[in-house]
Every structure is written in C-alpha cells, then in structure tokens.
Amino acid sequence: MPTVWDDIKKNRITMSRICQITGKRVIGGNNVSHSNAKTKRTFKPNLFVKRFFLEEEERWVTLKVSAEGIRTIAKLGLKTALKEAKLKGFLNEY
Image (cartoon, helix red, strand yellow):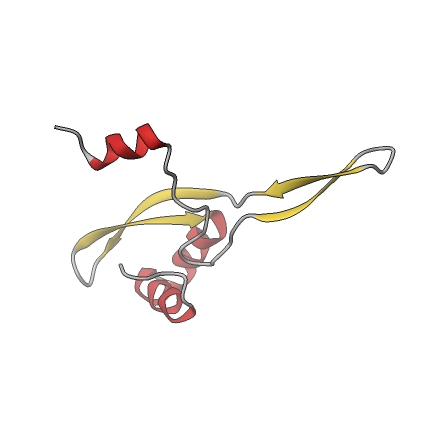
C-alpha cells in the first residue's frame, strides 16, 4: 500500500526552507567574481528537522528550525518560543 511519503519521494515534493521559530528563509543575492561579474545565487538558512519535548503537554514536537532557532528555544524555553512564533505567523500549529 503506497504511503504519502512514497508520493512525496516520487513527485519530488519538498517542504519550504523556512525556520518555524525565527522565520528565516531563502534569500537571493549575487556571486561576485574577481572581475566583478555578478551572477544570481541563493543564500539558504541552516535548517534542521528536530524533535523537542514539550513538558507541559508531555509530547514530542517536530519542528524545522534554524541554528538560531535552536539557540532561541534554549534561551527562552520551548513553550515561549512556540507562542512567539505563532504570534508572528511563522508557525500555524504545534
């Protein structure tokens, strides 16, 4: 029986490269050569798919977070970071 994961791999559907805590996303820019010729390029955020344990609800939460997002969670705590991300619109539901 095919699963959703099989469809994703088959059709090469990928999730967007956006941090769910900080909102960091892919931005565009230029490669600048020694001769000062410019070609378009992208800057991708340093993202990880990471599981965090939400103690208040006694369950695991899987998030796609940047390195800065992991540091934010460590500093503020998971519940506070999730609440702020939801207010800013980076996170739909957790």
